[in-house]
Image 1 (cartoon, rainbow, N blue to C red):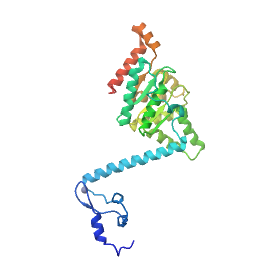
Image 2 (image 1 turned 180 degrees about the horizontal axis):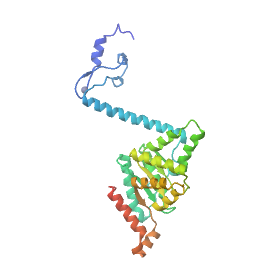
Image 3 (image 1 turned 180 degrees about the vertical axis):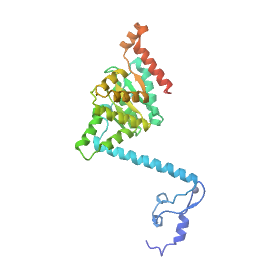
Image 4 (image 1 turned 90 degrees about the horizontal axis):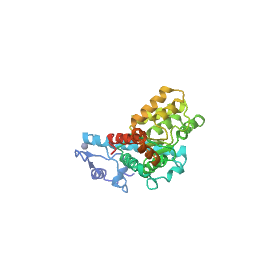
Length: 298
Ligand SMILES: [Zn+2]
């Protein structure tokens, strides 16, 4: 640039900006601003060092850091899962095409409310959706996932083995690393493990699950589990992994950080009505809803 023909100081004075908090005059950074065709918004100014400006920039930098991190995870997911990170059979399931049984309407309302809070970012607790096979647990979980994806959230959904197989691939494929995947599973906005307990879980898988659950708890990020097992049933399945202590720890942590929603069918309800003194299903259901209410879900 030919500075001789430029009224240097005049240009600088014209381009001076004041701190919005304390009014201190701020100089532009570098020499980009000397180019006539640069737009005012593209000129970078020095940062003021007053208290309010510092707070502003700290916040701004943090937002930028989080944005970069999200972009990194999105690229990573794209590389690992190719074009999508939810299997096609999950993608067409939503609340609108979920045919809720009358007895489960309340449960669905709780799930919808939960989803809303996840979108707002005010929800740090997870959710365990239980119920018999074929009752619609996966559909409901996928509906949450799709709603979150619609809002631009990063969601991973799959069976535990699918998620962990990606880690196993890193053993033979040096373009991915185990730490990178654990970091991904620990930091995306939502992770949904479908049909937990149905597949046999090895000690190795249990260890990975524990790490992910523990990390997400620390990061105050939710996790959703669908399972046909109740707490004891799941515990029994996990203990088959030959490490009872670890199994107990995973279950304790999961149930500590998750709300419970149980889907039931009318037959179970009829049974419960007939055996009022022993209507465990309905009692459990009411207890769980009450639990959700206590946790501020209603
Ligand atoms: Zn200032």
